[in-house]
Length: 323
Image 1 (tube, one colour):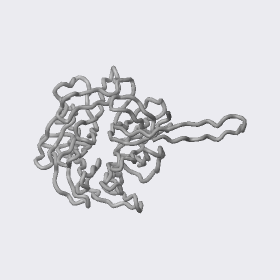
Image 2: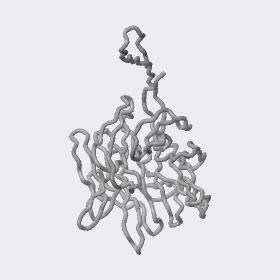
Image 3: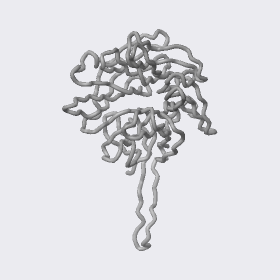
Image 4: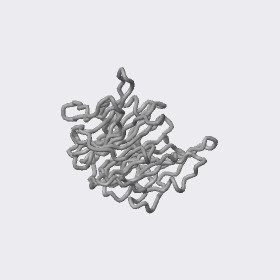
């Protein structure tokens, strides 16, 4: 499909400039990067790392893509103030991919993903009460701009992800135990009814950012077994069995902070995308995006540069490019 756009010209004696745009449909990866030197904006690239276009073009803030809608035409993303914790100071937006337009801010909070019909999305918001600060999970209805609170203030709950059938939400929760702060995964129904814990602190210090596989039978997340080395893992919801997809805890260097974060599963469920933050205080390293097969084979570095590239979100979308 090809569309022609005609620009206005103040001089009637000059020919009218014509720009042609071609509609393309392909697998892409949305990701955050500071490569424009202004802010941490959102870019779109091929699965091989070739930059297609820059999505946001802000001069301030950190912008992070979170989910693609079921109709493949809406990208859910948020803005965070530089230097703040990722659960504070967020504004949520939607990018219309084919129209190349941004809607929002829609609400304040850290978004998760859409319901299967695309009419709602889950998000978490940091609020302060007499008992302290908490993160609670909500559902936002795009049809009437209403919000429904799903979790109470007594516990900090964040990173909600709605299951492919729309019946469940996997999420993270933080609590203190034995003078330590633990982050674990839990499961509730779409109305906020608690079902079960998915991970337990007796074998994990940190489990976070769950994303469902397309069949809804498992979640992929990043995970630390008290070793300060983070890996990408897969958890079976029915058995709670955890399988390592990456082996960073085996191969990582313990003298350098080496971590794998924020996985995203491809639409067909065969690949996992994530980013690696390897930092030596004497020799700062770039933040880079990787892919790996769901079975743990073919680990591949997608971006390899001096930039901070993070939070990959993959999907098959349609978009216009100038010819």
